[in-house]
Length: 195
Image (cartoon, rainbow, N blue to C red; front, top):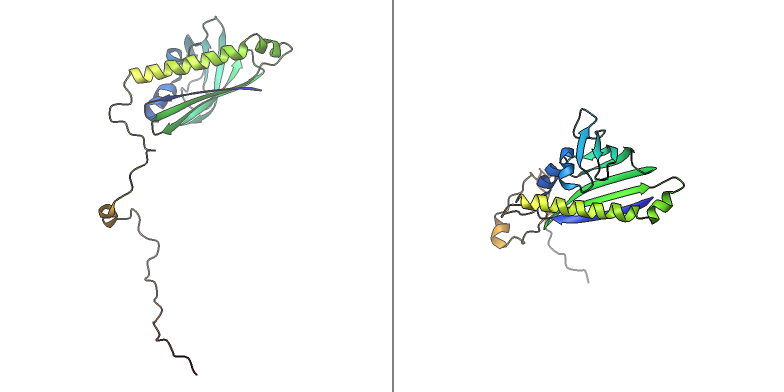
């Protein structure tokens, strides 16, 4: 199976990015090869959601989510219409100090007697270019909306070490597990050696 892996850093919190990409009906606004989406299942989120999308070249594909990680990403596969024997795509979010990394991984097996020939004719390059263009469009959509805000600070940022004053004011969040006082060993006077 061929693996394509693209990623982009978006200066926005993961919640904002997730709110946008988890709504499958937004796919035509950021995926370069998607013109419209028609849902084939009642649900709109979660595993098992199926939708049909029309591509720019007139093709229609049926896609299904195979895994749904709320707030972190989802996995999908092509069910019908695509030139793949097997396929698995994954869109994953990861928070870092500068914002959110959106990683799009797509694994496929072109299959059939002409599968390798299609790859030589540019299938892999076309898919990779579409992924790159789609991620750039996603970046533009989210940054244009000003989703990060002027005071965005990632949870994953490291903080300065507390100074002496802050350490003296420290109060633990949780009570200590030891509830009884530690027994002390009685002090004994040293005995001089016998000579």
